[in-house]
Image (tube, rainbow, N blue to C red; front, side):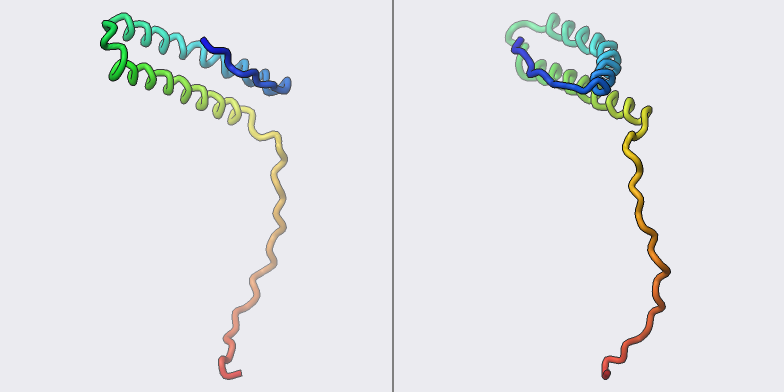
Length: 102
């Protein structure tokens, strides 16, 4: 397998990555089992086409699980950035009709 690029992380990001990895590890076992069974059930001429797309779909689903895990982790922790303060608007001035002849 071709080596993947290194991603530098802060300590907090590394902790989050570890939690996401744990979630993905459990889910990936199911995907790896599925891919192995699909590949074992096919003859060489059947490995491409429909089989290839079934495998790609399974891998994409695993990627989607990773995104869901990241979002769930962040939702549990909430935001670390303080909420921005917005100045309140004064009362809306009264409407008045402007005389077009003026």
